[in-house]
Length: 221
Length: 60
Length: 249
Image 1 (cartoon, rainbow over the protein chains, first blue to last red):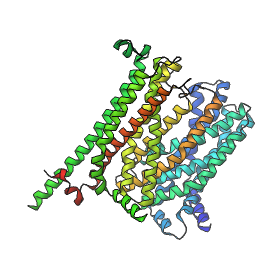
Image 2: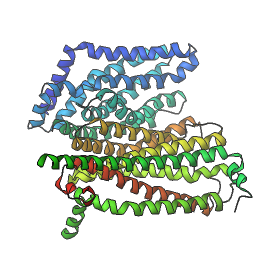
Image 3: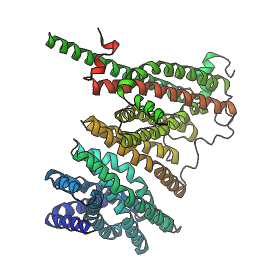
Image 4: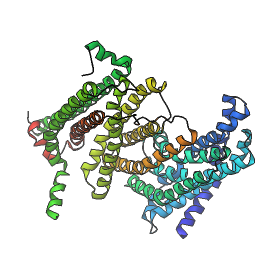
Protein backbone atom coordinates (compact mmCIF):
# COMPACT_ATOMS: atom_id res chain seq x y z
CA UNK A 1 0.00 0.00 0.00
CA UNK A 2 2.87 2.31 0.85
CA UNK A 3 4.54 1.60 -2.47
CA UNK A 4 1.24 2.19 -4.25
CA UNK A 5 0.92 5.61 -2.64
CA UNK A 6 4.49 6.58 -3.32
CA UNK A 7 4.20 5.69 -7.01
CA UNK A 8 0.97 7.66 -7.13
CA UNK A 9 2.57 10.66 -5.43
CA UNK A 10 5.61 10.51 -7.66
CA UNK A 11 3.58 10.38 -10.88
CA UNK A 12 1.33 13.21 -9.74
CA UNK A 13 4.39 15.28 -8.88
CA UNK A 14 5.89 14.59 -12.30
CA UNK A 15 2.61 15.59 -13.94
CA UNK A 16 2.54 18.79 -11.90
CA UNK A 17 6.04 19.63 -13.15
CA UNK A 18 4.96 19.02 -16.72
CA UNK A 19 1.64 20.81 -16.73
CA UNK A 20 1.66 21.35 -20.48
CA UNK A 21 0.96 17.65 -21.17
CA UNK A 22 -2.15 17.64 -19.03
CA UNK A 23 -3.33 20.93 -20.46
CA UNK A 24 -2.76 19.85 -24.06
CA UNK A 25 -5.13 16.92 -23.68
CA UNK A 26 -7.71 19.19 -22.09
CA UNK A 27 -7.47 21.77 -24.87
CA UNK A 28 -7.74 18.97 -27.39
CA UNK A 29 -10.95 17.81 -25.71
CA UNK A 30 -12.37 21.35 -25.77
CA UNK A 31 -11.47 21.98 -29.38
CA UNK A 32 -12.79 18.67 -30.71
CA UNK A 33 -16.09 19.15 -28.90
CA UNK A 34 -16.42 22.72 -30.16
CA UNK A 35 -15.77 21.66 -33.74
CA UNK A 36 -18.95 19.60 -33.97
CA UNK A 37 -21.46 22.45 -33.80
CA UNK A 38 -19.38 24.26 -36.41
CA UNK A 39 -19.50 21.24 -38.68
CA UNK A 40 -23.13 20.35 -38.13
CA UNK A 41 -24.86 23.68 -37.58
CA UNK A 42 -26.29 25.49 -34.57
CA UNK A 43 -29.71 23.81 -34.46
CA UNK A 44 -30.25 23.21 -30.73
CA UNK A 45 -32.53 20.16 -30.98
CA UNK A 46 -29.95 18.32 -33.09
CA UNK A 47 -27.04 19.43 -30.90
CA UNK A 48 -28.81 18.22 -27.80
CA UNK A 49 -29.30 14.82 -29.40
CA UNK A 50 -25.70 14.35 -30.46
CA UNK A 51 -24.12 15.92 -27.35
CA UNK A 52 -23.58 12.74 -25.28
CA UNK A 53 -22.00 10.88 -28.18
CA UNK A 54 -19.78 13.81 -29.18
CA UNK A 55 -18.56 14.44 -25.64
CA UNK A 56 -17.87 10.78 -25.07
CA UNK A 57 -16.02 10.23 -28.34
CA UNK A 58 -13.94 13.35 -27.67
CA UNK A 59 -13.17 12.05 -24.18
CA UNK A 60 -11.99 8.71 -25.66
CA UNK A 61 -9.66 10.51 -28.05
CA UNK A 62 -8.36 12.88 -25.39
CA UNK A 63 -7.66 9.96 -23.04
CA UNK A 64 -5.71 8.26 -25.84
CA UNK A 65 -3.38 11.24 -26.22
CA UNK A 66 -1.54 10.81 -22.95
CA UNK A 67 -1.51 6.99 -22.91
CA UNK A 68 1.71 6.84 -24.90
CA UNK A 69 3.64 8.42 -22.08
CA UNK A 70 2.11 6.28 -19.34
CA UNK A 71 5.11 3.94 -19.27
CA UNK A 72 7.42 5.32 -21.94
CA UNK A 73 9.40 7.84 -19.87
CA UNK A 74 9.85 5.37 -17.01
CA UNK A 75 10.96 2.77 -19.52
CA UNK A 76 13.56 5.10 -21.02
CA UNK A 77 15.19 6.13 -17.75
CA UNK A 78 15.18 2.63 -16.28
CA UNK A 79 12.70 3.32 -13.49
CA UNK A 80 10.43 0.62 -14.82
CA UNK A 81 13.09 -2.03 -14.46
CA UNK A 82 13.70 -0.95 -10.89
CA UNK A 83 9.99 -1.26 -10.25
CA UNK A 84 9.93 -4.76 -11.74
CA UNK A 85 12.79 -5.77 -9.43
CA UNK A 86 11.31 -4.27 -6.27
CA UNK A 87 9.74 -6.42 -3.58
CA UNK A 88 6.27 -4.98 -4.15
CA UNK A 89 4.28 -6.82 -6.84
CA UNK A 90 4.58 -4.94 -10.12
CA UNK A 91 0.81 -4.99 -10.59
CA UNK A 92 0.36 -2.84 -7.49
CA UNK A 93 2.77 -0.26 -8.86
CA UNK A 94 1.04 -0.40 -12.23
CA UNK A 95 -2.23 0.23 -10.40
CA UNK A 96 -0.69 3.35 -8.85
CA UNK A 97 0.46 4.60 -12.23
CA UNK A 98 -2.96 3.98 -13.76
CA UNK A 99 -4.66 5.87 -10.93
CA UNK A 100 -2.25 8.76 -11.40
CA UNK A 101 -2.99 8.73 -15.12
CA UNK A 102 -6.70 8.89 -14.44
CA UNK A 103 -6.30 11.74 -11.94
CA UNK A 104 -4.30 13.79 -14.42
CA UNK A 105 -6.09 12.96 -17.67
CA UNK A 106 -9.50 11.51 -16.83
CA UNK A 107 -10.68 13.58 -13.91
CA UNK A 108 -10.06 16.95 -15.64
CA UNK A 109 -12.26 15.76 -18.52
CA UNK A 110 -15.03 14.90 -16.05
CA UNK A 111 -14.82 18.36 -14.52
CA UNK A 112 -14.68 20.14 -17.85
CA UNK A 113 -17.49 18.16 -19.52
CA UNK A 114 -20.44 20.08 -17.99
CA UNK A 115 -19.03 23.39 -19.23
CA UNK A 116 -18.75 21.97 -22.73
CA UNK A 117 -22.17 20.38 -22.37
CA UNK A 118 -23.61 23.89 -22.03
CA UNK A 119 -22.52 24.56 -25.61
CA UNK A 120 -24.92 21.80 -26.61
CA UNK A 121 -27.81 23.15 -24.57
CA UNK A 122 -27.98 20.15 -22.22
CA UNK A 123 -30.26 20.43 -19.21
CA UNK A 124 -28.64 20.51 -15.78
CA UNK A 125 -30.00 17.03 -15.10
CA UNK A 126 -28.42 15.66 -18.29
CA UNK A 127 -25.17 17.40 -17.35
CA UNK A 128 -25.22 15.63 -14.00
CA UNK A 129 -25.74 12.23 -15.63
CA UNK A 130 -23.00 13.03 -18.15
CA UNK A 131 -20.56 13.81 -15.36
CA UNK A 132 -21.53 10.68 -13.49
CA UNK A 133 -21.11 8.52 -16.59
CA UNK A 134 -17.71 10.06 -17.30
CA UNK A 135 -16.71 9.62 -13.68
CA UNK A 136 -17.43 5.90 -13.93
CA UNK A 137 -16.21 5.55 -17.51
CA UNK A 138 -12.90 7.42 -17.72
CA UNK A 139 -11.15 5.09 -15.22
CA UNK A 140 -12.05 2.22 -17.58
CA UNK A 141 -10.31 4.12 -20.37
CA UNK A 142 -7.16 4.49 -18.28
CA UNK A 143 -7.25 0.82 -17.24
CA UNK A 144 -7.72 -0.64 -20.72
CA UNK A 145 -5.34 1.94 -22.12
CA UNK A 146 -2.64 0.77 -19.72
CA UNK A 147 -2.75 -2.70 -21.31
CA UNK A 148 -2.33 -1.17 -24.76
CA UNK A 149 0.42 1.18 -23.59
CA UNK A 150 2.33 -1.70 -22.01
CA UNK A 151 1.99 -3.86 -25.12
CA UNK A 152 3.21 -1.15 -27.49
CA UNK A 153 6.07 -0.06 -25.24
CA UNK A 154 9.18 0.35 -27.36
CA UNK A 155 7.42 -0.96 -30.47
CA UNK A 156 7.87 0.99 -33.68
CA UNK A 157 4.78 2.95 -34.74
CA UNK A 158 3.59 2.65 -31.16
CA UNK A 159 1.21 5.62 -31.11
CA UNK A 160 -1.00 4.65 -34.02
CA UNK A 161 -0.81 1.00 -33.07
CA UNK A 162 -1.97 1.85 -29.57
CA UNK A 163 -5.13 3.48 -30.86
CA UNK A 164 -5.80 0.57 -33.20
CA UNK A 165 -5.53 -1.85 -30.27
CA UNK A 166 -7.36 0.13 -27.65
CA UNK A 167 -10.21 1.95 -29.41
CA UNK A 168 -12.22 -1.21 -30.26
CA UNK A 169 -11.99 -2.22 -26.61
CA UNK A 170 -13.35 1.19 -25.58
CA UNK A 171 -16.61 0.61 -27.44
CA UNK A 172 -18.62 -0.87 -24.52
CA UNK A 173 -17.66 2.05 -22.27
CA UNK A 174 -18.66 4.47 -25.04
CA UNK A 175 -22.00 2.76 -25.59
CA UNK A 176 -22.98 2.61 -21.93
CA UNK A 177 -21.57 6.05 -21.11
CA UNK A 178 -23.20 7.98 -23.93
CA UNK A 179 -26.24 5.73 -23.68
CA UNK A 180 -26.78 6.67 -20.03
CA UNK A 181 -27.25 10.33 -20.92
CA UNK A 182 -29.43 9.55 -23.92
CA UNK A 183 -31.59 7.14 -21.96
CA UNK A 184 -32.11 9.73 -19.28
CA UNK A 185 -33.02 12.40 -21.83
CA UNK A 186 -35.50 9.95 -23.39
CA UNK A 187 -37.05 9.45 -19.96
CA UNK A 188 -35.96 5.83 -19.64
CA UNK A 189 -33.71 6.35 -16.62
CA UNK A 190 -29.96 5.98 -16.67
CA UNK A 191 -29.71 3.47 -13.83
CA UNK A 192 -29.18 0.40 -16.01
CA UNK A 193 -26.46 1.99 -18.10
CA UNK A 194 -24.64 3.41 -15.10
CA UNK A 195 -24.65 0.12 -13.21
CA UNK A 196 -23.31 -1.67 -16.29
CA UNK A 197 -20.56 0.94 -16.51
CA UNK A 198 -19.84 0.25 -12.86
CA UNK A 199 -19.65 -3.48 -13.59
CA UNK A 200 -17.20 -2.82 -16.43
CA UNK A 201 -15.13 -0.68 -14.10
CA UNK A 202 -15.04 -3.43 -11.48
CA UNK A 203 -13.99 -5.94 -14.12
CA UNK A 204 -11.31 -3.55 -15.36
CA UNK A 205 -9.92 -2.86 -11.90
CA UNK A 206 -9.67 -6.57 -11.35
CA UNK A 207 -8.13 -7.71 -14.64
CA UNK A 208 -6.42 -4.77 -16.34
CA UNK A 209 -3.46 -4.18 -13.96
CA UNK A 210 -2.71 -7.86 -14.15
CA UNK A 211 -2.74 -7.97 -17.97
CA UNK A 212 -0.76 -4.72 -18.16
CA UNK A 213 1.85 -6.18 -15.81
CA UNK A 214 2.21 -9.29 -17.97
CA UNK A 215 2.69 -7.06 -21.01
CA UNK A 216 5.24 -4.88 -19.19
CA UNK A 217 7.30 -7.91 -18.21
CA UNK A 218 7.44 -8.83 -21.90
CA UNK A 219 8.73 -5.38 -22.80
CA UNK A 220 11.38 -5.60 -20.08
CA UNK A 221 12.70 -9.03 -21.05
CA UNK B 1 -33.91 -28.96 -59.29
CA UNK B 2 -34.85 -25.29 -59.16
CA UNK B 3 -33.55 -24.05 -62.46
CA UNK B 4 -35.14 -24.32 -65.89
CA UNK B 5 -32.01 -23.22 -67.78
CA UNK B 6 -28.44 -22.05 -67.29
CA UNK B 7 -29.36 -18.40 -67.82
CA UNK B 8 -32.09 -18.81 -65.22
CA UNK B 9 -29.44 -20.12 -62.84
CA UNK B 10 -27.11 -17.19 -63.44
CA UNK B 11 -29.90 -14.63 -63.14
CA UNK B 12 -30.77 -15.93 -59.64
CA UNK B 13 -34.28 -14.50 -59.89
CA UNK B 14 -32.93 -10.99 -60.39
CA UNK B 15 -30.45 -11.20 -57.52
CA UNK B 16 -27.62 -12.45 -59.73
CA UNK B 17 -25.30 -9.52 -59.04
CA UNK B 18 -25.60 -9.88 -55.27
CA UNK B 19 -25.48 -13.67 -55.08
CA UNK B 20 -22.59 -14.06 -57.52
CA UNK B 21 -20.85 -11.06 -56.01
CA UNK B 22 -20.83 -12.83 -52.66
CA UNK B 23 -19.97 -16.31 -53.88
CA UNK B 24 -17.43 -15.06 -56.41
CA UNK B 25 -15.52 -12.78 -54.08
CA UNK B 26 -15.54 -15.35 -51.28
CA UNK B 27 -14.04 -18.13 -53.34
CA UNK B 28 -11.65 -15.78 -55.11
CA UNK B 29 -10.44 -14.44 -51.76
CA UNK B 30 -10.00 -17.92 -50.31
CA UNK B 31 -8.07 -19.03 -53.40
CA UNK B 32 -5.82 -15.97 -53.21
CA UNK B 33 -5.20 -16.53 -49.52
CA UNK B 34 -4.32 -20.18 -50.06
CA UNK B 35 -1.96 -19.20 -52.87
CA UNK B 36 -0.32 -16.58 -50.67
CA UNK B 37 0.21 -19.10 -47.87
CA UNK B 38 1.68 -21.62 -50.31
CA UNK B 39 3.90 -18.91 -51.77
CA UNK B 40 5.11 -17.93 -48.32
CA UNK B 41 6.07 -21.53 -47.60
CA UNK B 42 7.87 -21.78 -50.93
CA UNK B 43 9.85 -18.58 -50.29
CA UNK B 44 10.81 -19.71 -46.81
CA UNK B 45 11.93 -23.08 -48.11
CA UNK B 46 13.98 -21.49 -50.90
CA UNK B 47 15.65 -19.17 -48.41
CA UNK B 48 16.60 -22.05 -46.11
CA UNK B 49 17.97 -24.02 -49.06
CA UNK B 50 20.04 -21.06 -50.20
CA UNK B 51 21.44 -20.56 -46.72
CA UNK B 52 22.31 -24.24 -46.43
CA UNK B 53 24.09 -24.11 -49.78
CA UNK B 54 25.98 -21.02 -48.67
CA UNK B 55 27.03 -22.81 -45.49
CA UNK B 56 28.34 -25.73 -47.52
CA UNK B 57 30.32 -23.37 -49.74
CA UNK B 58 32.03 -21.72 -46.83
CA UNK B 59 32.89 -25.09 -45.31
CA UNK B 60 34.69 -26.30 -48.43
CA UNK C 1 -1.67 -40.01 -17.88
CA UNK C 2 1.87 -38.69 -17.81
CA UNK C 3 2.66 -40.92 -20.77
CA UNK C 4 -0.09 -39.30 -22.78
CA UNK C 5 1.01 -35.81 -21.78
CA UNK C 6 4.51 -36.47 -23.00
CA UNK C 7 3.16 -37.71 -26.32
CA UNK C 8 1.16 -34.52 -26.79
CA UNK C 9 4.12 -32.33 -26.01
CA UNK C 10 6.14 -34.20 -28.59
CA UNK C 11 3.94 -32.65 -31.28
CA UNK C 12 4.42 -29.22 -29.73
CA UNK C 13 7.99 -29.27 -30.98
CA UNK C 14 8.34 -27.61 -34.39
CA UNK C 15 10.72 -30.35 -35.51
CA UNK C 16 7.98 -32.99 -35.11
CA UNK C 17 5.10 -30.80 -36.16
CA UNK C 18 6.60 -29.56 -39.43
CA UNK C 19 6.53 -32.93 -41.24
CA UNK C 20 3.22 -33.86 -39.60
CA UNK C 21 1.61 -30.65 -40.88
CA UNK C 22 3.02 -31.37 -44.30
CA UNK C 23 1.38 -34.80 -44.29
CA UNK C 24 -1.94 -33.58 -42.93
CA UNK C 25 -2.75 -30.47 -44.94
CA UNK C 26 -3.57 -32.17 -48.28
CA UNK C 27 -6.19 -34.28 -46.51
CA UNK C 28 -7.85 -31.22 -45.02
CA UNK C 29 -7.70 -29.44 -48.38
CA UNK C 30 -9.39 -32.43 -50.03
CA UNK C 31 -12.06 -32.50 -47.33
CA UNK C 32 -12.60 -28.77 -47.82
CA UNK C 33 -13.10 -29.26 -51.55
CA UNK C 34 -15.51 -32.16 -51.01
CA UNK C 35 -17.58 -30.26 -48.44
CA UNK C 36 -17.62 -27.17 -50.67
CA UNK C 37 -18.98 -29.15 -53.61
CA UNK C 38 -21.62 -30.82 -51.46
CA UNK C 39 -22.57 -27.55 -49.77
CA UNK C 40 -22.79 -25.63 -53.05
CA UNK C 41 -24.87 -28.35 -54.64
CA UNK C 42 -27.25 -28.37 -51.70
CA UNK C 43 -27.33 -24.59 -51.44
CA UNK C 44 -27.63 -23.68 -55.10
CA UNK C 45 -29.58 -26.58 -56.58
CA UNK C 46 -31.48 -28.49 -53.92
CA UNK C 47 -32.56 -25.80 -51.42
CA UNK C 48 -35.91 -24.35 -52.48
CA UNK C 49 -36.48 -20.69 -53.29
CA UNK C 50 -37.38 -18.65 -50.22
CA UNK C 51 -40.92 -17.36 -50.54
CA UNK C 52 -40.05 -13.94 -49.07
CA UNK C 53 -36.51 -13.26 -50.14
CA UNK C 54 -36.55 -15.07 -53.49
CA UNK C 55 -33.17 -16.35 -54.67
CA UNK C 56 -31.29 -13.59 -52.86
CA UNK C 57 -31.33 -15.52 -49.63
CA UNK C 58 -28.76 -17.97 -51.04
CA UNK C 59 -26.05 -15.59 -49.82
CA UNK C 60 -26.82 -17.08 -46.40
CA UNK C 61 -24.82 -20.18 -47.41
CA UNK C 62 -21.67 -18.04 -47.44
CA UNK C 63 -22.53 -15.29 -45.02
CA UNK C 64 -23.49 -17.30 -41.94
CA UNK C 65 -20.64 -19.87 -42.17
CA UNK C 66 -18.13 -17.03 -42.69
CA UNK C 67 -19.42 -15.24 -39.57
CA UNK C 68 -19.29 -18.45 -37.57
CA UNK C 69 -15.74 -19.12 -38.67
CA UNK C 70 -14.55 -15.59 -37.89
CA UNK C 71 -15.78 -15.96 -34.30
CA UNK C 72 -14.62 -19.53 -33.95
CA UNK C 73 -11.12 -18.77 -35.23
CA UNK C 74 -10.80 -15.92 -32.74
CA UNK C 75 -11.62 -18.35 -29.92
CA UNK C 76 -9.12 -20.90 -31.26
CA UNK C 77 -6.48 -18.16 -31.44
CA UNK C 78 -7.16 -17.26 -27.83
CA UNK C 79 -6.95 -20.95 -26.91
CA UNK C 80 -3.51 -21.26 -28.49
CA UNK C 81 -2.52 -18.00 -26.83
CA UNK C 82 -3.45 -19.36 -23.42
CA UNK C 83 -1.59 -22.61 -24.15
CA UNK C 84 1.46 -20.64 -25.17
CA UNK C 85 1.40 -18.57 -21.98
CA UNK C 86 0.79 -21.55 -19.70
CA UNK C 87 3.11 -24.16 -21.21
CA UNK C 88 5.53 -21.75 -22.88
CA UNK C 89 5.51 -23.78 -26.09
CA UNK C 90 6.90 -22.15 -29.20
CA UNK C 91 4.37 -23.77 -31.50
CA UNK C 92 1.31 -22.19 -29.83
CA UNK C 93 2.29 -18.67 -30.77
CA UNK C 94 3.00 -19.79 -34.30
CA UNK C 95 -0.46 -21.35 -34.52
CA UNK C 96 -2.09 -18.08 -33.40
CA UNK C 97 -0.05 -16.14 -35.91
CA UNK C 98 -0.98 -18.60 -38.65
CA UNK C 99 -4.71 -18.40 -37.88
CA UNK C 100 -5.08 -14.61 -37.62
CA UNK C 101 -5.04 -13.72 -41.34
CA UNK C 102 -7.64 -16.38 -42.13
CA UNK C 103 -9.86 -15.17 -39.31
CA UNK C 104 -9.58 -11.58 -40.49
CA UNK C 105 -10.42 -12.71 -44.01
CA UNK C 106 -13.57 -14.49 -42.84
CA UNK C 107 -14.62 -11.45 -40.82
CA UNK C 108 -14.18 -9.31 -43.92
CA UNK C 109 -16.10 -11.80 -46.08
CA UNK C 110 -18.89 -11.85 -43.55
CA UNK C 111 -19.14 -8.05 -43.77
CA UNK C 112 -18.93 -8.07 -47.55
CA UNK C 113 -21.64 -10.70 -48.01
CA UNK C 114 -23.71 -8.98 -45.33
CA UNK C 115 -23.59 -5.78 -47.38
CA UNK C 116 -24.53 -7.62 -50.57
CA UNK C 117 -27.42 -9.20 -48.77
CA UNK C 118 -28.53 -6.02 -47.06
CA UNK C 119 -28.77 -4.02 -50.28
CA UNK C 120 -31.58 -6.02 -51.95
CA UNK C 121 -33.30 -7.05 -48.70
CA UNK C 122 -33.20 -3.84 -46.66
CA UNK C 123 -32.34 -1.35 -49.39
CA UNK C 124 -29.07 -0.35 -47.74
CA UNK C 125 -25.51 -1.65 -48.02
CA UNK C 126 -24.93 -1.20 -44.34
CA UNK C 127 -27.33 -1.37 -41.42
CA UNK C 128 -26.24 -0.81 -37.83
CA UNK C 129 -27.61 -4.17 -36.85
CA UNK C 130 -26.16 -5.67 -33.67
CA UNK C 131 -24.64 -8.66 -35.45
CA UNK C 132 -23.08 -6.69 -38.30
CA UNK C 133 -21.69 -4.11 -35.88
CA UNK C 134 -20.13 -6.75 -33.65
CA UNK C 135 -18.65 -8.43 -36.71
CA UNK C 136 -17.10 -5.10 -37.70
CA UNK C 137 -15.58 -4.72 -34.24
CA UNK C 138 -14.29 -8.29 -34.41
CA UNK C 139 -12.63 -7.35 -37.70
CA UNK C 140 -10.97 -4.41 -35.91
CA UNK C 141 -9.74 -6.75 -33.18
CA UNK C 142 -8.16 -9.00 -35.81
CA UNK C 143 -6.50 -5.98 -37.41
CA UNK C 144 -5.14 -4.89 -34.03
CA UNK C 145 -3.68 -8.35 -33.40
CA UNK C 146 -2.05 -8.50 -36.83
CA UNK C 147 -0.72 -4.94 -36.60
CA UNK C 148 0.79 -5.51 -33.17
CA UNK C 149 2.42 -8.85 -33.92
CA UNK C 150 3.89 -7.62 -37.19
CA UNK C 151 5.27 -4.46 -35.56
CA UNK C 152 7.35 -6.44 -33.03
CA UNK C 153 10.56 -7.84 -34.49
CA UNK C 154 11.41 -10.42 -31.87
CA UNK C 155 9.09 -13.37 -32.65
CA UNK C 156 8.91 -14.58 -29.04
CA UNK C 157 7.83 -11.19 -27.77
CA UNK C 158 5.44 -10.81 -30.72
CA UNK C 159 3.82 -14.15 -29.84
CA UNK C 160 3.37 -13.28 -26.19
CA UNK C 161 2.12 -9.76 -26.89
CA UNK C 162 -0.31 -11.25 -29.41
CA UNK C 163 -1.38 -13.79 -26.81
CA UNK C 164 -2.22 -11.05 -24.31
CA UNK C 165 -4.13 -9.09 -26.95
CA UNK C 166 -6.16 -12.07 -28.06
CA UNK C 167 -6.99 -13.07 -24.48
CA UNK C 168 -8.07 -9.53 -23.63
CA UNK C 169 -10.06 -9.54 -26.87
CA UNK C 170 -11.78 -12.83 -26.18
CA UNK C 171 -12.93 -11.57 -22.77
CA UNK C 172 -14.22 -8.44 -24.47
CA UNK C 173 -16.04 -10.04 -27.40
CA UNK C 174 -19.11 -11.08 -25.36
CA UNK C 175 -19.14 -7.70 -23.58
CA UNK C 176 -18.97 -5.92 -26.92
CA UNK C 177 -21.72 -8.07 -28.40
CA UNK C 178 -23.94 -7.47 -25.40
CA UNK C 179 -23.32 -3.73 -25.36
CA UNK C 180 -23.93 -3.38 -29.09
CA UNK C 181 -27.17 -5.32 -28.73
CA UNK C 182 -28.22 -3.08 -25.86
CA UNK C 183 -27.33 0.01 -27.91
CA UNK C 184 -29.30 -1.39 -30.82
CA UNK C 185 -32.48 -2.00 -28.84
CA UNK C 186 -32.28 1.46 -27.29
CA UNK C 187 -32.15 3.10 -30.68
CA UNK C 188 -34.66 0.78 -32.39
CA UNK C 189 -32.98 1.44 -35.72
CA UNK C 190 -32.87 -1.82 -37.60
CA UNK C 191 -34.90 -4.51 -35.98
CA UNK C 192 -34.41 -6.85 -38.93
CA UNK C 193 -32.18 -9.68 -37.94
CA UNK C 194 -30.11 -11.58 -40.41
CA UNK C 195 -30.53 -15.18 -39.42
CA UNK C 196 -34.18 -14.99 -38.51
CA UNK C 197 -35.27 -16.47 -41.82
CA UNK C 198 -39.03 -16.93 -41.73
CA UNK C 199 -38.99 -20.68 -42.07
CA UNK C 200 -35.63 -22.32 -42.12
CA UNK C 201 -36.00 -25.43 -44.26
CA UNK C 202 -33.85 -28.34 -43.21
CA UNK C 203 -32.04 -28.34 -46.55
CA UNK C 204 -31.01 -24.74 -45.88
CA UNK C 205 -29.66 -25.69 -42.51
CA UNK C 206 -27.73 -28.58 -44.01
CA UNK C 207 -26.33 -26.37 -46.72
CA UNK C 208 -25.09 -23.91 -44.11
CA UNK C 209 -23.58 -26.65 -41.99
CA UNK C 210 -21.80 -28.18 -44.98
CA UNK C 211 -20.37 -24.83 -46.00
CA UNK C 212 -19.28 -24.19 -42.42
CA UNK C 213 -17.50 -27.55 -42.41
CA UNK C 214 -15.88 -26.69 -45.73
CA UNK C 215 -14.60 -23.37 -44.35
CA UNK C 216 -13.40 -25.12 -41.24
CA UNK C 217 -11.38 -27.69 -43.18
CA UNK C 218 -10.07 -24.93 -45.44
CA UNK C 219 -8.94 -22.98 -42.38
CA UNK C 220 -7.07 -25.98 -41.00
CA UNK C 221 -5.38 -26.65 -44.33
CA UNK C 222 -4.28 -23.03 -44.83
CA UNK C 223 -3.21 -22.62 -41.20
CA UNK C 224 -1.09 -25.77 -41.39
CA UNK C 225 0.51 -24.52 -44.58
CA UNK C 226 1.19 -21.12 -43.03
CA UNK C 227 2.51 -22.54 -39.79
CA UNK C 228 5.02 -24.53 -41.84
CA UNK C 229 6.19 -21.33 -43.46
CA UNK C 230 6.44 -19.61 -40.08
CA UNK C 231 8.45 -22.51 -38.63
CA UNK C 232 10.93 -22.31 -41.50
CA UNK C 233 11.16 -18.53 -41.26
CA UNK C 234 11.94 -18.65 -37.56
CA UNK C 235 13.91 -21.85 -37.19
CA UNK C 236 15.56 -22.06 -40.58
CA UNK C 237 19.00 -22.32 -38.96
CA UNK C 238 18.11 -25.33 -36.80
CA UNK C 239 19.87 -28.62 -37.41
CA UNK C 240 16.65 -30.57 -37.97
CA UNK C 241 15.72 -28.30 -40.85
CA UNK C 242 18.99 -29.07 -42.59
CA UNK C 243 18.24 -32.78 -42.23
CA UNK C 244 14.80 -32.57 -43.87
CA UNK C 245 14.64 -34.65 -47.08
CA UNK C 246 13.07 -31.73 -48.95
CA UNK C 247 16.12 -29.56 -48.24
CA UNK C 248 18.51 -31.93 -50.04
CA UNK C 249 19.11 -30.77 -53.54
